[in-house]
Image (cartoon, rainbow, N blue to C red; front, side):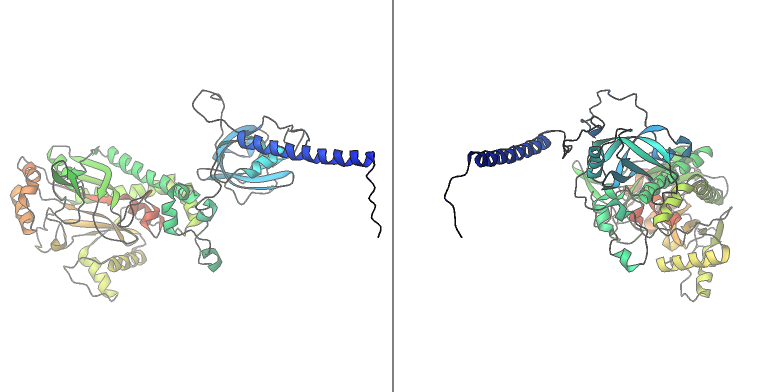
Length: 533
């Protein structure tokens, strides 16, 4: 092979120089684009030189600092989108749940609370939707909050993956309001998957600790959105029903000088130079309100129990729905009022929260809650007899164990077709010191529990309103009289006969919906192993 040592011609040298210069220019342009991206608004620069006819119609909004800009803009809720709006242009603010960009189109799902709708961003010169806008939409991180200006379009077939099925949004403008980080600790669509025994589905199920450690994300699932709206409904119905019956809402102390019920399961807190306790119950203060002539009172507030119970139904802090009522002759006047209150709450949930109950049912196996009006009331010996007939050995003066309660619930449902019932006349030995004994049976008491799906959700009784008798019963229970002196003294001023009860709100919601763990109905649960977030 002959290798020529002759120099290249001038023309060849010029061509090589031009090629090198062009390559260097392209590299410089690329570096400049990268620098502009890092220093600019965060939106991608077009890869090609073709015109971006969507310029000014997408990007990252500047930080909203209440300057008054866009205050006249009207937004439409996702849940309100329907076929009657076909062809109408709307603004929607929602979360971008998922997105999938391919070529000239990007499909996304927008979520607002528990409602979802499909978004389609498709290249169209006529509608001024460019490739750059499509690409920008596809690059928005999941769970980011976005503003969308779009046209409502009727779909040819129902969009099965969304709650809004008959229409979709044809996006024209896409703006990021608040971006979520790229790596999320859990995916909301994984947390929202229906519960199933399918082994493949179990592999991607989000466990409870992961959910609770990242509760803000977990609460975004449609089922959780529905659960806590139902919970709000229970509180609203409780208040409305009792207020309509002449009850007065009161607010009782949560820092107290002695254990509310004389037990050891209290949280001790430092109180200046001494100690105090977190209230186990508003019990004593409800009674004092009755002694103060309020006649009928209720309260909604935190209750604290220092019990090392790591079960599916116990919390160390929960919301108590408590009520107390004076009566004329028989504590059943109160018992019937409480029972009817529950019946009215159940009816209110069924009639007013059907959509939320259905949403919960899409993720969890929810069996409709059965109840009777008026509610079923059994006496404790009747319950014992039903258990014995089912082969359970239980004493006449024993309290019911959790398995016994659950079995009795199943027996009652099978025989009486109700998930809610009242068990009256509990043994005196298993009730608190302020419980009035039965006048005809010294081993029994004027006390009762109420059950949902075989689990206790209320414990109550007629209270002793005579100070001498109350002192005697307190001593019998080994309670330091000096620590409840103010409580006993309130009855020395004259107090009407009265009764009441305390309800665990989270437990009511759990059992009404048929859920398996109370942590699913506590927004930020507290138990012996968890005090965060």
